[in-house]
Every structure is written in structure tokens, then in C-alpha cells.
Image (cartoon, rainbow, N blue to C red; front, side):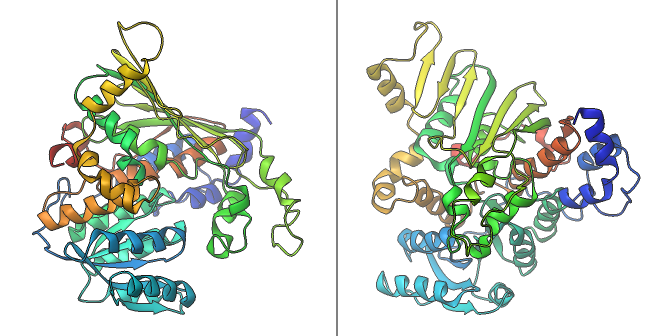
Length: 467
């Protein structure tokens, strides 16, 4: 199907597409043309509160935390928050619809320090009761993607700060809901992007801020991770929710692990912003073929017609003219990679494995002793301070522990969190924007400006200003 045919096909289903990517409500898209949909996606919505840039709250000596979702990520949240220490935070409530998962986390806490949080389980809306508790300052959310926004919005409306697993939202409208609710309630809504706290990523951020790269020009990043066995597992993801997204949607479904650190290197919404993207996906083959290998009693045995292409390429242009290539591939047998390439006028870095070149020092990568010199000179002070604890407690090489420790420490001290609701929206909106671009024949789709113009003000990241 050529582009013109694809667009004609799309226009017959404009209302369905508008619903899929969650364009702002209040208008009819049934007879819209492509340009109308693109304009609707990029529109700035009115604010009903005041901005939360640099939001600070009074110091909370011991942060009282509640955790919703106790599967793969949530169980780890409980373990690592417990490792942060009860002098800094206390887990007061935990919740999962599956009681056995809640009891497993409760048992772990009792055996590792003796914390005894209240347990909520057994019904789909048990989390609402948790959010209404008076002894909760912060709610962390690690549930299926479609539950993130309803739970975060409700928690903020109950006066709670929120920390959301990635991606934070799935549609344009959901991204705006997060921003507007955070501004209305003056509550933090932090994206739990653990990769921003990796040793390599903090090191690159420090070098970028210190001028080692000169003027930044482009980056490449990705989430490349063969997840086929986990996607088709009947127990790993609750109700196989993640595979269902791959069955129904085509776009970059998981953008933030690669993109979050790059956004920080480039000062996105802190002097630059994502302007527009173009996205395209390869043919889908990996999921169809893998479906024939699973057990016959699997709901997806021999299932055909998964929507998500095996490789999604999304190209982003920023307001200052930089470009970012963002990839998503969870169905081919490639080694894990986030790429993590960053280019400037004075230096270049690529990850997996980490290598670096410096202008004027030859055409190859730095020799091991030279690389080590840069690694030691520009090691981020936060990682240096927490490295022993990160090694002890782990979590993706320690980055999970560093992230949670840092979030709690900021609330303890009453300083701004490193990532805010505008980051959550800008990084997460790549998913619906890429879907929209693909469905219309890979046309450019502009990003909404969730900051309403404030991005033009250069401001230092908290992890650099208050490490």
C-alpha cells in the first residue's frame, strides 16, 4: 500500500484513530483530514492551576510510601524502598489485586526489618482505599500501562505525591491529564525512569554539562530487548497485558529507557524541546512466528496479525535543530542495547559497549587508559556517593536503588525532584505520536508543548544542581 492509499484508508477511520491515540476530547474527528488530526495532537490545552517547575514541598523527615502493583517492578520497589532505610522512608501500605503477590511482599518486609504495612488486595479498585489513607505522602505505581494515569490522577487528587513507572501515559489526552492534575493539586508526579540513574548515563550527563561534548548535535537511543518468552508467558505479566498492547498497537510502545537520558543530556524542556517526529515500523514477523511455538493452551497459540512491527524507528527533531534516532525492538534475537550514542562538536560516545572519542585525539576511540581517565574525572557525585549501596542492593546494576534513594532524599530535604510531570508527559507522548505518524504514512507529527512555553527558560536539572 503506497502513502496515498494508506492515507485514504486512514481517513475512513479518523474517529477510531483519534480514539486510539487519545486526541483531546471535545471535537469530532469522523470527517477530519490528516492535517486536522496532526494539529489536534499538537494543540496546547488550557491550564487550571499554576506551573510546577521546580516544585518544592516542606521537608518530610520520614516519607510515608504506599506501593500499588506488586508484580515485577512493584515487588522490587518494595524491596529497594525497604533498603533505603526506615530513617528516610516507611512503607505504610501495599496493594495488588492478587493477594498472593501482596502477601509475598509483606512476608519479605517482615523478614527484612519488620515493616508491617497495611495490605490491600482482592478487588480491582482496592488501590483507591490505599490512596485515601492519611498516613501516605507518596504513592509509587507499577501496574499495567493502562492503569497508570487513572491511579496517578486519583492519588494526586487525594493530596499524594506520585511516582509512575514507564511509560507514564499512553495517549495525548492522558499526558495532559497528568500535567493538569499536577498543576491543579501542586503535587509531584515523577517518572520512574531508572536508566537516568545508571552509572554510564550520569557520567555522560556530567560530561555534557561540563562541556566535554561541546555543542550537542544528535543522539541515538533505543530499547532493544528480546522479550518474546516473557510476552507470551501466562504468568510474568498480569493477564498478559503487555502482549495485548503489541497485538493492538504499532508505534514506539516503550520509549523512555533510551530517550530519558538523552532528553537530559540535551536539556529538553530546559532550554530545548521536542518539536516533531516521524515514525515508521518494519514488517511484523517475530510475534506471529513465536506464537506457533508456545503451548497449545496458551491464549495466543498460533495467533496471527500482531500490529506492532518488529523494529520501530522514530526520528525526533528538537526546537534547536538537534536530531534523535529512537528505536524499539522486543521481538528479534539481538543482544540487549539502549545504544546511548551522543554526538557533539568535541566528542562522541556510543554504548554497548561504552566507547568514546575526543576531537583532536585521533580518529579512533579512546584507549583504555584514556577512557578510564575521563570515567574517573567526570564520575557523577551521586553515583560516587551511593556506589557501595548500589552494588549491595542492586536493581539493574544499582540504578533502581539510586533512583529510589534519590527521590526519597529529595523529599527528605525539601528540594525539587530530578524529573517532573513535564518530563513524564514529553517522554511518554512519543508512543501516541509515533502511532499517529505511522497510521498516516509516516508524516511529521508535532509534539504538544506541555510546558506552555516555559521550556525556553534554561534551568539546571536537580541531579546536577543538588546532587
